Length: 335
Image 1: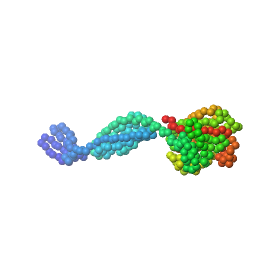
Image 2: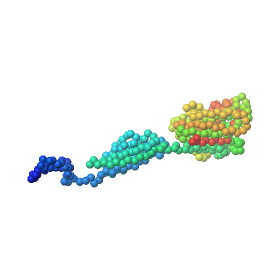
Image 3: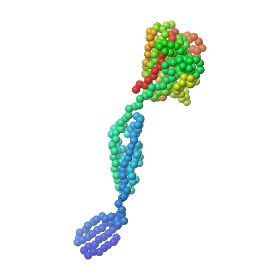
Image 4: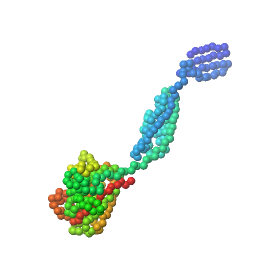
């Protein structure tokens, strides 16, 4: 402490931190004044608060917001995130509860205790779900085409001889068609990619060759939509664009018994003879569930005595006493 004696009073100077407290006493009156320390300087680099942000662009993450802190000269950060929560992270990532308007405030400070504040208000809007694409089928019109072995056939792209005999070529309805002969275990089978948890419409123009149910065991057209995953450990479906490349056995479902397991079936439809001689279109809708691949398995059933008992013994089914023809398979996403 330094004391200076004056004629009319006394000044006492006591050093405290960055300032000096000077007490001036004159004629019984006391005055106190804070003065800068002789060597102190102004804060020439005060903090400046600022941030940008970006939200997710997909339906499932539109409410996930990434904040990018672009403040200058700051050492501490306090975020009011506008949803009742706060954060001291430099660049917080926030999952908001859903759609709505949110005001976010960032308060920054530096080592000298100086602060700055920046706020911004934004609105989160859930985007529309993208349209589910239609599945891509190989030879959906049953055009007579080459296959990996054997002669050209309307069944090209639709053969899996592990679950049935191939359907056969015929004509009708103004074009090539595929037929399931009576008393034979004929089928078509194809795997294709789908979007999980989506609805799909299936349309199949068909004709029973007889305009009345004939024989003791009339034919029926059975359509199964099979789960494309999980029925064989480690199996990954492969999709083809050329009928000469797709195999005819040893892939996907490798036995009829597998196709009959309830857990493997997403949908089962059975069409009986409508008792007329016109092509009709059978339509139904299935949901893909958790699958990103499904198999369409269509066969004639009726369990009449087969022409070849060995084929019936192998597959365990055959169509009845009527021939069935199908003109095409169209599958579209229901958006």
